[in-house]
Image (cartoon, rainbow, N blue to C red; front, side):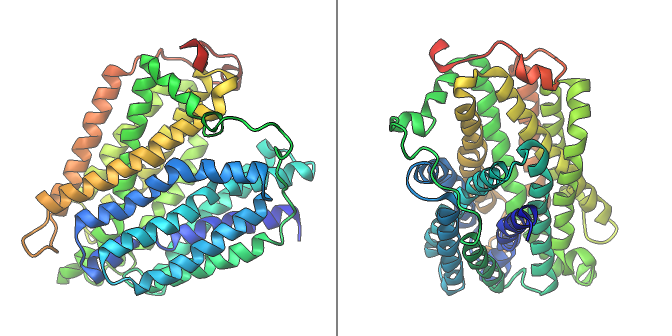
Length: 429
């Protein structure tokens, strides 16, 4: 088996695991278990909590003590065992701790999968810039295939979705032990302080007003991402309570409809270079925020019958909403920080979006939905008001960003990334 194919399998299964339950857990939670929205928000916060500290800790272990492919495999096996126990959970409080443990094992594998792939490609004489993107795209394919699998098997509201994810996790864990060895690369180097290892020096960037503003908005946009992941699928499932919509495609197979979002994501990546050259980083990030307004606003007035086009358009818009901020944001960090702290600054960007932003969005949205948009029966939800409130949130964020984020319009190119200024180093702030 070729190196490329082996890494494609790794990438495919990495995201197949996540796609098996991430979008459909809401349907299981609300439709099957009928647990509260506030508690559901806490479940989605587990990703953010684990993202704050676990990738850095596992990175230290892989750099100094354990082969990356072995650590990667162990984490997936442990995560798979935890996922097998999810159907046994009978109350939401316990579910929080079980899912947190699962996320503690899963979230660091996102970074480790990249580290393993890069090491294997380089050791085989490959070019990671040229060779890795075609491999990574199979991760998105794996996520989509998982959503389709769970949907077509009728597992969207069933605990069986966790068995699918668990089986894939253990399979990937065992498969990882067959990969080429990726030994610790810093085993014999002097130990650095914990502050250096965890990239905490990058927090000094927050003393710069522009960087502080950027990272705060990164957190707010990270919150928006959790809203669509958490509630999109269960929103479509709720139409099953209306006889006129029960046999529509979007109600029978919501996850398949929602997978259009991931398909769109892969396509919008190709459009980013044009938009960055034409409009500059700030404008592209604003486009992302406007796309979030449309994403939520279209859901507010959509239905699975004559309003299906709005659901599909919302899923297409998601690609712009997700990609434009994440990629242009990472480019902003790249062009505005010195090489000495660039990796740490990128880690801070991820921490604000996938860590603090995810926790904020998950917890607050759950409480707001439970308090203001759930009927007295504890089950029925005012979805139009929910999506309009989310759209209003995204609109306020976009307007404030446009006013408060001071960044000169500039053309972005590869040369600009390498020779841009001013560059901010932690010791210069």
